[in-house]
Image (cartoon, rainbow, N blue to C red; front, side):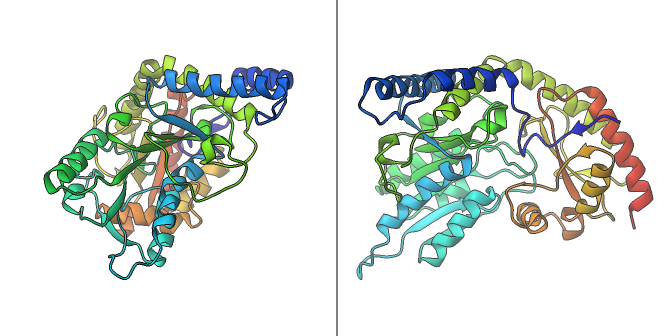
Length: 392
């Protein structure tokens, strides 16, 4: 049987055309962009062209884009900027941040580290469908609130957060109370290539994206900033002093090409994902005992169609993942970035009120442009067979 890859939320198969174009350009333009000679200036020019073209492809005309080593690093930069504000002042209350309880581990673990340094944290639980109430966010704001971080699309079960409404509620609450508006960061890694990013800069102060989620290479991410911030790391002053280190020209070229290609195909890919989602949800309804977490109908606008969480009660999610892997079908139990996937998956689903027996039996299936209806049928056939044989 051929391989069936249904783990596109973890990473995507790199596009050979994108890699080859980037390699050809990198072999031609090889100098350090910080060098003052003509080769360095040539490299710098192409780096800036990639930055500008990437923003244009996202339909973003304001702010600046900082290239990073990953989406996780891009998420860390605004959070670590808070460290500069932790200087003890006897008369000042501790800094305060607001974060959703279902963030990617890159955000979750960094916030917990800041919490140990004295930052006060308000964790916002979603409703049972995985969505964050904008009013819950603004209601937690206070004078000491320095940062709010809410992901755009959940990587575990595909829930879309209303970034525009959340951002507007933050602005309104700050205006009405007379307090300084907190920095609003959006982890947009799972939004890229699935939803339009055009309106995000109207409401957020920063967002993080990553190339390998849209068939680009690993090792290159980006952070959009509405205005400069005081970076925690220091070095050679690259990327406006925000992210030190010699720039990854190959990665910047490839990220640009990947975003341009994904943006051109956004509507087509969305329609394809909806067709696959409908086929999957219909098939799951015929597997006795299996259920969607959370329950949702095909084409539900509250979710991206390409990420679906499915529970098989009575069978551990890790057991199902390994059994499917033995049959050359790749799915996951949740974030590939979590050090302990069982704990990580449980954290997200538990915040939604999902019982432990359901959360521990859940797997994540995610599709992409190369996924076929046959892939879905193969998964359904083997998932049903394995569930019947292995459940307790």
